[in-house]
Length: 571
Image 1 (tube, rainbow, N blue to C red):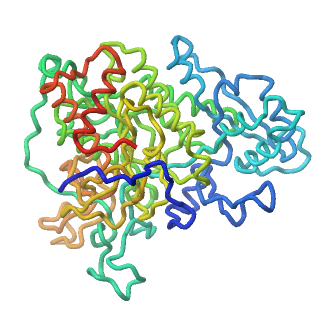
Image 2 (cartoon, rainbow, N blue to C red):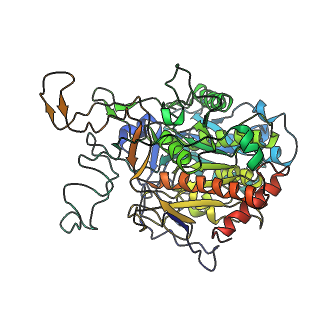
Image 3 (cartoon, helix red, strand yellow):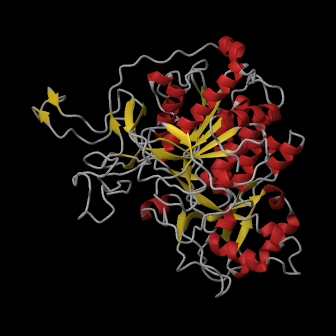
């Protein structure tokens, strides 16, 4: 069995208790935290409002930013009301300018988009007479403590509940590096090595030496890619999957040339969107100018070969992640166009602020519905990253990310998200939004865990009442950037001196053939996203549920009906 919808509990709204769940992601290497201006929220050290406050659960957040609804950031009275409580902890807020790209639209959808959170940067208060450590968690606690005060008319509980941390999200591909002994390996047995049930020289899902990716050679021809006219005739339009990830690298199978050598082919299976990428870059630049340092900026769609340790040349853990995902969609739904939007860095980190910016602009384009715009034609969005929130209450209905996703759901777009690789039932977002309430004929979020090739659940996969489906995600074969040939050497070369040698063992990080094996729920999610596309295509040909139905509500109803036929249970 390659995939299935998981049976939901009778009361799908009853939340499984997270308090005693395995913790999942609780730390990142110190160098990675410093690079991204991030901190770990340690429950034992976190600032609290009172001795009775329930300690937060561990999460990772950016220290100098908060996410606040745009309409509040443009309200001078609200900003004035934040000044006194933040001054007491030595900080102040700086707000972004209004987003001109959202001013053109009218109606309920555009009002919802204008209310989504944007980046507000925290800086030392100019009146502070002592050195200040800027910390978003401390600032958020100060605002919560001041909420409801008669002196703060706009700083009421309803408004403060919408203020949240800018979480650091991590990709859901198995990682591991022999240079830094990074995680990702899952031991063959549950103990510390004395009771392993598998080979003692390797970790499950990682090959000898700890590398999670293995280059392979593939001899298959590329699948047939129907013309636009054929898709229009059969389905109403060409189906489109948006992949928010590390972007795309060169690969002949995807018809992507090296950067500067033709780029993404306009008529091929891959597409990019320079205007959305420019919006992400501009918003990041604006935050940096206001004092958000260090913030790593995402400039374009290209997944460039990068190394976390340049002097060593070791490949970064998420390099090729987006290209690999695109190849999965290409294999399963070959007629689909894949819109690559880069929101993740090659070191496996993405910021919720960048993700929100991408989703906001994507939803705007879908709402405008221009016929010649690939972004406006998106049917499914695939997300292969996530984070653990500090409290179940703080990441449910008040979450800006959930509100952005809900706008897409209301537009008839299916959102598929990876469940994470931490072997926990603690909620991993955005996948855990699968349990949030939607209207009866509204498209749900689909959260996806990973299966082994034999159909068993992979030991690394998260699980719980919030996981909707399981699909193959261990030792998946897919496309990889052909410009990646990192520093590791074959274990054997004969003779050793000539370059290149006449005979050699496999070079474990030479991907110039363009294919790799990799594991993680990161790769289960796009598999299900592509299966949804196939289901929509079948509905178009067999039941007349064409992909160009004039009303987005009609398309949403069609998508929901197809999912029900495949076993999805409404929650």
